[in-house]
Image (cartoon, rainbow over all chains, first blue to last red; front, side, top):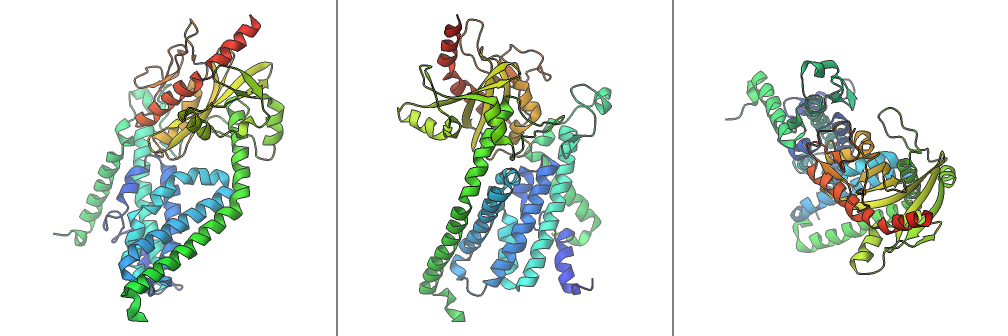
Length: 214
Length: 252
């Protein structure tokens, strides 16, 4: 890592593993439950959060010394909301198809606690470059969990990955379905995402006992 | 100044300043991009109407509209007439009927005013399609669609869209396998009464071979969105019944 100092690199790599926003900081759980029924939605949400958190963290960090502390939460909310709305408007004008895919996520991004959480915990107390790295790192950590959850929910719930059937045709009873296998409709329900996130947390903490709080 | 950021005066001034800056930024973006957005929405409507009557570039399982570069030509080629229908079934031609905002018309009807019902008459390979827009409520926000029918109100094609249904669940009303289920379903009973179509759980007919059960197979985990689709089909398409009755009488 010639480009980044060791400390800076840690800002990106930590959220991927030992300080993951979802499994360790328990931020962004709501959207992780809501949109992981399919991989494509997980990926889109991951990328969208990457942009918003990266830029938002920098903006908040730049104005951190002039924000009145009494209304800082409102200021953060307005920064996220206007960022998301401007991006949405630009996409609507120049990439209409893409904006239709994303429009569902706009509300989810604005209310995503991972964004407010990182603004509050990191951007308010650090310089723009560090805040940018922290934003990118946390967004990646978030996206990784989303993709893992989305993978299992789509595979077991619909028998597809990115919308492509991988287990055969459930109606024609080909592939795995010819053996009597059925899609598990439960996997499409949001609570199942919570169970998968729980399993990820279990695996992660049993591999690294330092993460276990008492 | 550094310790002053906690004072009431500074807080209020900051809030006002921020509102002005952010507000004008948003207003500027919105108004400068508006022409593009309106144009995109206009083309999307044409694409949706054409899609419902089967003019599209679909692959095996995906949804592909006719390209934005040629949608205007295709629209004037396939859509023979655009009508505005009233609730007693009288039709007037109107070449900009597709720009009628169904949401506004629904609000008008609520206030007891006369409601304009747009209807598009498409011609393709010798067959006539009557395409009607519908609009209703899903779980989170608006859902809408276009339904193409023949003169007996048998569905020939349907397109659904939504503003904010849950991805992977309710949002799947926008999937081919859901929309295609509607093809061939009847809206009228044998005696000509309007019955509509229900998005039914446990429909036991996933391939939709039974075309006269007034039911299509529901989506897993999307009960409320599915109910919304049933409701908007029943409430909105029913309004066109007088028009189709008149149409029949003309030929008999």
